Image (cartoon, rainbow, N blue to C red; front, side):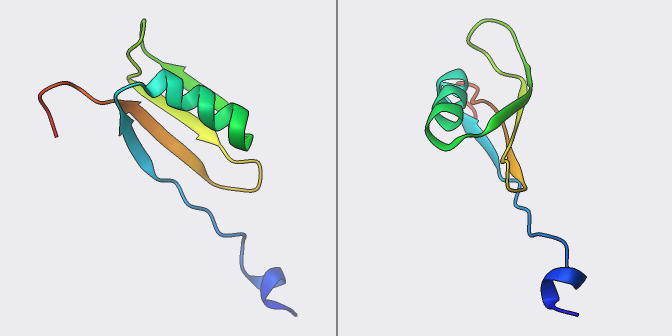
Length: 69
């Protein structure tokens, strides 16, 4: 057996906050081929978004709130 038959593919799920989360979502989808799984929030605000990477893993993100780090 090879290592690829034993181990599942590696996956990374970074969590991000962005001032323009909807713009970042568009960029990641158009430039790199991420796929929107869910996007919750109203207007420009994103409370939670999950983007999947076709080869495994993905990104979770939300809007950065002003005055918070």
